Length: 166
Length: 282
Image (cartoon, rainbow over all chains, first blue to last red; front, side):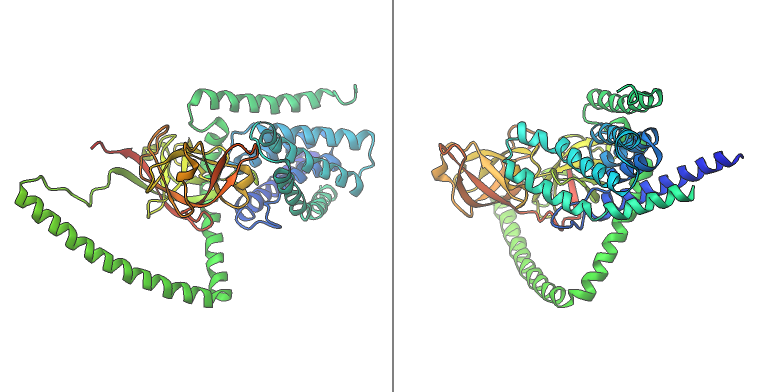
């Protein structure tokens, strides 16, 4: 096996393990033990981190996998977040390749945008069709974002570590 | 813009769209059965969910034993008292049933069997709750292979309504809980027989409360009234306990009012449940 194929295989293995661990943490542990009264999102950060360090294509691919796992964790058909995180990965990767400098700032901006987009994708139906009050929806969104932000930096350094390792 | 639309980027975006389309089509044609994503992931994720559920449950028990020992001891004493109370009620019930049978026999009436439930039940356990902050649903460990169908009601051992089955896989199913905003069930108030609809409401979601709306005469609704399923407009049989009226509020238009219902089932601690798979005639 050539060196580049070994590296690719190692990356696939490491990202698969990272995605599985994130799914377990987000979907099977923290769903029972909310932080700040909300269940945090971790899987979007994997897609964003991959996009920042490995480019838009790999960001999109990991985004598909992360979104698929997130739809499974949400007990819903594999549509909403499979699409959302795939496009977040593609767009975050494009921004890092063209506008932003690869690094913590680019990751932070992309991660915050990812959290806002994930919130908006879920919240829009409750606001427009569900008749929910804006204050109730934004209260949930704020707590969700605050709880999720705790995991942004650890994921950044894990993905940075993978990028340096392989 | 041209850089954004690279060939590989288009392929990745197309793959995501194809996966979503396949899921949407399978969901639309399956009539409530799991979409293709659930079908292919179920054999891998169901054992993982069950294992993690067991592990987290064990760790919670250990934590409870170490840090909440006094609370557990007090709760144990309360439960023992309750068991003694229920045993007394059970003895009274047995005497009343025997007397009823004697009287029915004297009058030449047919015997009734009070121990026969009016529905078929299937015991299930929760293997995971949703990770969403906007909805309330959970996965149970049985599916189509155990005769579970979309629309089946899920209850506790006490007969409290917990949710409705909305998606069925071969060995697991998704249940939407009663506080979810998509939930809606016909209801009746015990005592006054006032009818209405109990539904999940996002503004009450955080408090884990329900909304009793479409009441004909709000003057007939009182705090403390028990709310039961009416058996109309759905698969839920009549008589399942939903909750208790906690307060009456004016709606946002100011022209009507609705009742806030506290669910009888404690969703934070339910684990072993029953699915009503069939309602017996008569």
